[in-house]
Length: 117
Image (cartoon, rainbow, N blue to C red; front, side):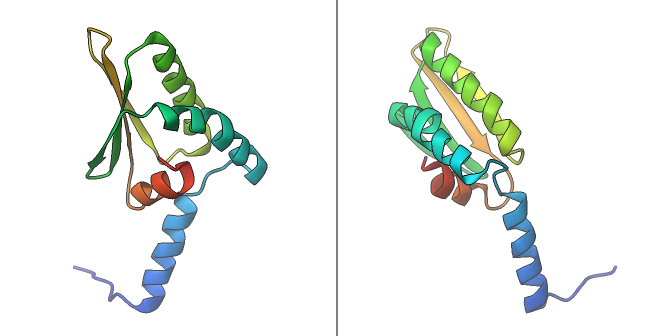
């Protein structure tokens, strides 16, 4: 078995790699515009937030309009933040919809710091 001894250099290299993997591909003005529009709109609609092992689940009203907004959010976020995994669960009676936003190490921090969710 070839185990590499962990050194401070290895730790910083891994940390830098994780940061690069978790960076949004949008430029600062583009990201700022998204934060002011789509992201801000969804953030205001969150009814409940649950912490998951690798991310968060957010509860929204189960209306068609909300589902359209969640779908639009996913379509654009997957282009700029390919490290996210998105899951939408919708109740049959249209009472609520859940968006699970998950990924690898560091995703939780990214969700709270960059998206503000």
